[in-house]
Image (cartoon, rainbow, N blue to C red; front, side, top):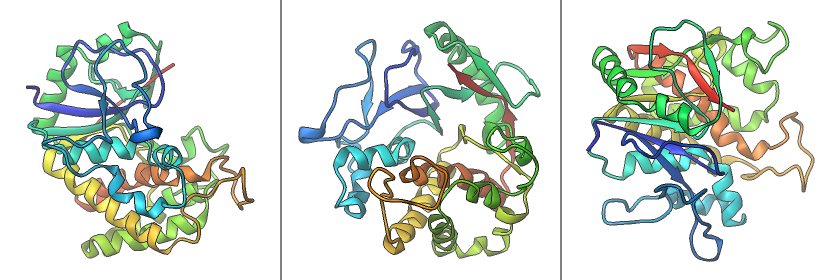
Length: 291
């Protein structure tokens, strides 16, 4: 049994190293007629939508909000959050839990200062990223800090913006996304945890952000983080006019081509806020992008 469990979300076939025990490949396979097979047959994947003896709460706990939407679109909208929900609810024995996706991970090999590293998408790359040395380094970092996460960047330096015109997590989000979900989410955060009131200014005043949010942290902290996130999302879904905004059917005032992806974009900004609001000690490492 590994002391680290990082649920790694897949929605397509992609090179991976299965011969390790801490970066766990997962997919939201659905149920019944909508069920589909794992991304490939080269190793074992966990279908995070299937209940078992140790796992009774799946992402379908939130299916009622999307009752008018097909199951496959619901799972597509949930994205990595379906795996995050599995990670905190599946009675993992590991002391440390984390979140990653099939082509983004953490560079845990040495103290490099660059924000990101690009690597070839291959099994060999993943063999290095998931090596025993990487795992030992992660455990060392976690003994010294509360969370290990990809390095923060100045918002004006993100690849999503041309210049420094936008300088906060909120303004950066609103450049391309629908406003309704953002402000409902902020209301939901305070509803989930009123003690965050004095920390909310981070969204409008911070000049840095850990975009893309690949991390590993102490078990109780990930459970708190993901639980508070979904409590906030309940508020969003309960009050929004449109749960699944689809540009193929309607017109929306945003440049984002797939506005139904807002649950993931909101989580991306909630993770660094959570670190700030709870005054967590963090170790930052470069983000690895495979491709």
